[in-house]
Image: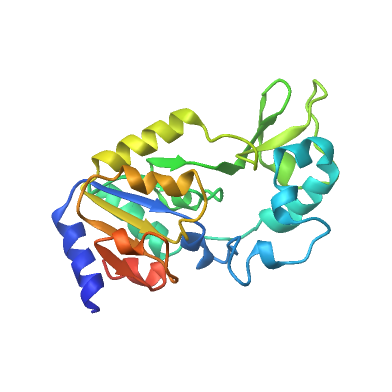
Amino acid sequence: MDSAILTLKEWVAQSDNIVFFGGAGVSTESGIPDFRSVDGLYNQKWKYPPETILSRSFFDKNPEEYYRFHREKLVIDGVKPNRAHLRLAELEAEGKLRAVVTQNIDGLHQAAGSKKVLELHGSILRAYCSRCRKPYPADVINYGQGVPRCGCGGVIRPDIVLYEEPLDQDILREAIDCIRKAEVLIVGGTSLNVYPAAGLINYYRGHKLALVNLSATPYDGYADLVIHEKIGQVFSQI
């Protein structure tokens, strides 16, 4: 076993106060493309740049085009949790993991069995009316044709944080609290380039910060442990 992975395994074995903070890379091994890799959504041709389509102003002005993109690119059927999701759920069940803080909207952590999941960017598995805020099942927005509308006439939207929208402050505060109090913070599958989410790492006060990502991040120099490998492979060993 690689010495860095062995060290992480020891940290995990010795702690009952672990927090995991993850991004798109956690789900790529389940077949969900990340947004910024060479093969990610941001490098696929579309009528408008994905950053534009996934903005609040675009959604409000052009919901038809948004939903065309949403149903083709954001809804991925048949995906299942991978080794990272499953091991995190096990660690929580073992009383070691206090929380999963995720930037992902796919719900795979919950599908794996994790209970304490703080979704910074919401979930594609929930929907609500943009006018009256009535909740709706995700099938209403993820399938079908055209723009889904509520009985009040409002456009039904996914419960995700679009560009130009703030993060949910209650979830953000809870994430900060969990990270600040963690003994071991494992950051995985994220480039740590997207703010304000990436800035959460600055709230960590411990000395066991592990970064697990295929490529280098701006925080590699601050970490106590850096592992540049697939996150599923790493978690299958700890």
